[in-house]
Image (cartoon, rainbow, N blue to C red; front, side):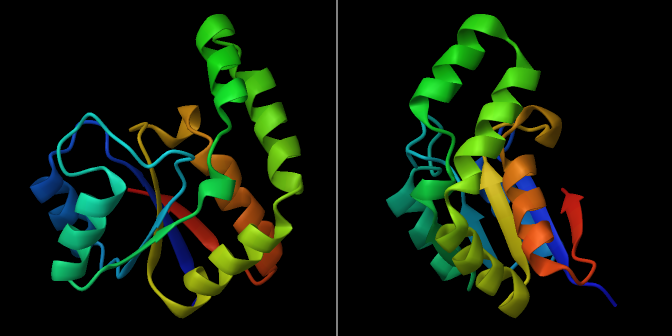
Length: 146
C-alpha cells in the first residue's frame, strides 16, 4: 500500500483539538512548513507547539526553508493572484532540494503531516511542498489533506 503524506492547516483549531485531530489520523511527526513559526493563536508558536506535541509522542520538525518567503506572501496579500503565488513558490522550492530530501526522509520513516496556517490546502503553499515531496518519492506517495 502506498505511503500517505498528510497536510493540515491549524486555522480554526485550538491547540487541544488540533492535537486530537493529528492523533485521530495516527500522525507521529509534524513537519512545520511556516517560514516564521510564530502565531497569535495560543499554543501554535514553535516552542509551545513542540512541547505539547512531545507530550503526545509526536515529533516536531521545523523547515524554515520550506516556508513561503515574506516577499511572496506580501505580493499575494496585495494582488490575491494565487496563480502567480503558486508559480513563485514552485520556483522558490526548486532551489530547496536538500530540505525536500530531508522532509522526504521524515515522510518515509514516519506518519508525517505538513502543517501551515491556512485551513484549505488549495490556498496554501504547503500543497506545493507536498507535491515536491511526492515528486521526489516516485513510488505513488499519496497526499491527504486533513
